[in-house]
Image (cartoon, rainbow, N blue to C red; front, side, top):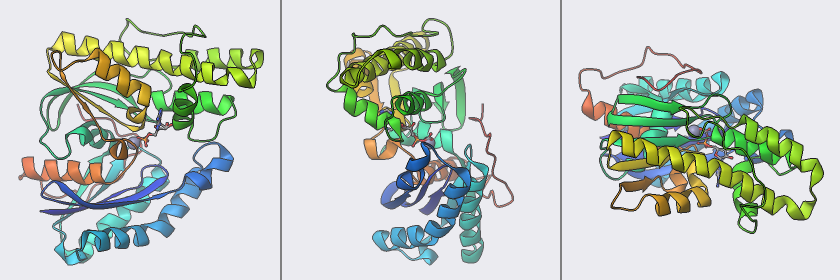
Amino acid sequence: MIVLAIETSCDETAAAILEDGKPLAGHIASQIQAHRPFGGVVPELASRNHVENLAPVVRTTLEAAKRDIANVDLFAATRGPGLASSLLTGFTFARALAAGAQRPFRAVNHIEAHLLSPFLGSSPAPCIGLVVSGGHTLLVDVEDVGSYSILETTRDDAAGEAFDKAAKLAGLPYPGGPEIDRLARTGDPARFDLPRSMMRERGFSFSGLKTAVRYLLPKIGPDDLPDLAASFQEAIVDVLVFKCERALAETGRSILAVSGGVACNSRLRDRLAAAIPPTVARLLLAEPWLTTDNATMIAYTAYLHAYSNTAHTDDFASDVDPNLTLGC
Ligand code: KG4
Ligand code: ZN
């Protein structure tokens, strides 16, 4: 089965093609440079750029996969959550392709796609999933594809959002996560004592941490920035690692699957590997190229649903949902 998927939930225009669950090609037109002067994503600018990028991105992906649009068995696109105007561009484009090719269309939940992305190349198995992105911080008990129980979710800022906001306060470019990761490599994570809010309670809260950074910044100099970046990152990583270990212990699951843009963070990857040895659980970290927004994870999720639910074959009549949650 050949799946062609489109992802336009935020500022990346992405397309990907999978054959029988294996990636053939994927292409992403990044808009980071366009939004950087504004310090964050400007919705109207994002949707205008998607409209320009979609046809070339799909064409490049088909060429790289050495496939023709007529070879595609299933079209898919991100339904939500995300920016309404961005979602509409890719969703409408993919549905039009499906209608033209007279093939079915699948609407995919972006959070579910992140959640399942560590399994690409193998088969999903029961696990604890940690999704840490710019929009979401979720700890999920995964029974099967489509069967999810949310264990903990964010009360305020998502993990990636906290990275981006703290970086902006410190005058670092957007997106801030990779910048803090890079600066933190030469910093002392124990230099500043920053809050680990809701460590023992259920749920995540990172806005207090951001406020602590806001108050510290006027008191420190540029040479202290690496220490602040490392201390800030350590506070987030401490919370994430603690809650993953607790979820594994409480549920008895034997796999931890970590995904979303913040799963790219080098300190989080190292600390999880140290805290969760193979004797405790199998640690499945999404490959770095799959952590930030991409269409391969959308195609993979569409494929898994098409494969597991033959009764329900088409979402052509569905609509985008900017506030879509993980279906539980
Ligand atoms: O998954 P993603 O592309 O978008 C959403 O669905 O939200 O995640 C983007 C987020 C941004 O907040 C970015 O700063 C963060 O992932 N990010 C990182 C790193 N790379 C990307 N955060 C921390 N360390 C990184 N290395
Ligand atoms: Zn995402």
